[in-house]
Length: 191
Image (cartoon, rainbow, N blue to C red; front, side, top):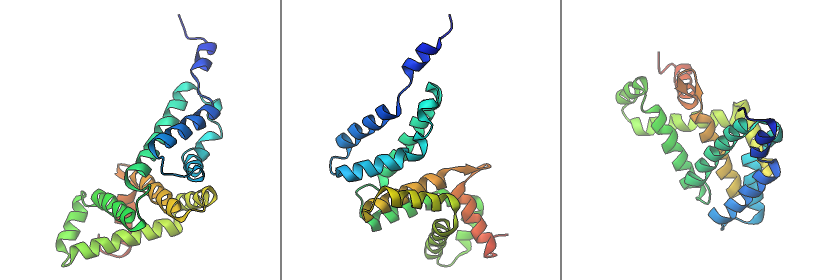
């Protein structure tokens, strides 16, 4: 016996219910956040995903929910409520670990006299380039600016968005590794 449309529709979660669920969850897991910050976080988590959410089938809704959960975990584990300097170090550490696993980068680092300082400098330059000229990150920063005026929360959301973007992949490598290697090639450091 097949599943009919009524059964499928009964499994769907409405946009309103999704927002209510996140509001309850944030109140429980992040009680230190103000109501305004909670609303800002929900906006950041869901805004681009809610436009057509009610039209999605349950399987597609589940995928959206997984993406939102992934985004939230990045924010909560490394950036939310963390002072800006420490949050930035968390970002640098996370992104640095991505690139140091590549053999070509390991070779480049091994040849450098002051490899830690040079590596940090390049990491920061690639991050700066992404924030200043990457279309996706520009859109994210515009969205974040519309979500909140709280500078501390804004920084946390930008760091989380940047990490989420950098962990995505292009071909068979992560986006940050791709940008990092391209930066080194532009500077004639890697062949």
